[in-house]
Amino acid sequence: PRHNSYASKSTVTLASVHSRLPFTTTSKGMFARSSSSASTTLTQTTEPEQMTIDRTMKLQEEEPKTKMFSPDKSVITHRVVHTTHGGYTNGRMGIGHIFGIDAMPTALQPKHGFSSLKNPNQVREDINLETSKHSKKLAFKIRHVLTPEEADAVWRISDQVGYTDFLADYNTPPGMRQNVVMCFIDDGAFTDAVFQRIKDDLPQEIDGRKLVGLSRRWNAGKYVKGRQFTPHIDGDMTGHRLTEDKKGIQSYDGDRVHTKLSALFYLNDYKHDGLVGGGTKMFKGDRPDGSSQHYYEQQPEKGTAIFFRHGIPGSRLGNEGSVMHAGSINLGYTPKLMIRVDVLYEAEPEDNFERRRCSWMDFDD
Image (cartoon, rainbow, N blue to C red; front, top):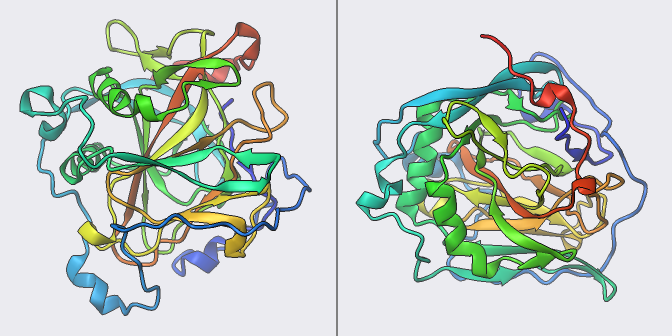
């Protein structure tokens, strides 16, 4: 698949993070770079509403707040809209599905009050990933894009469709991605409403290319206790949307748009659901560094989204401002729930990667 992730040069031992695994897998990262991290001290953004988590908390104190499933009770029906190549968490290739949702959860339907209006407490805050006065990576967060009830409704979609460790159109080294996922293509109403809420807080241009919208493909991820996503850079793509008959998928707008930002939405947190750990580290340099002065770590905050530059360095759309990031280990019983979508900007045809036929080839069941 053409949407590979750029992995850091690190070694991952699965058995060390999950004692039930009967084997140990190590993997040297793909496309490793040799440049070192910068040493400038990072000033953390104050989070007045964000819970400070004591990582030494006793497990019995977590159990009363543990939520394994979304409190939303909507019945979700779905269908397969695309079957394609992709990768499993062990690095092996396979074939799997992308889904369409027949009806969104009640809390996400306009007739029940879901709209494109910003939430009253929605606010953008920049994340400082500056390495020097001449080098600054683009990253920011928009807090409270979704209400807790709306976040529960998005979480409900994945609960109903179901998770797998197969990720369509992506391939990562063994052990780098340690979550289970579910990918769906929205018919446009939900995605467009979310975009209207955040568009004024997004960069209106990047590299001289104008903001277009959000891809309608959403990748939901679930991390159980002991699982994480090791350091990597997200790959870029042309974006997706449903075909006119809503029975398949196609590129968002041919060669005229391309993704430049990743958007990660947190669907649960400690305050509402008892989630412990599972933050997102964004590194200032091109290699992960364990010292907190070399990264900013955002703790999960329900309904909040973080945004950062992506694109594989060295590719046609690669850029030195792409953000190396990692998902920290989930420390408790409550699974970490997130969902990712890509932000689209104008592109020229020569910007796009040459398509590999396997990324768009349909397969019979």
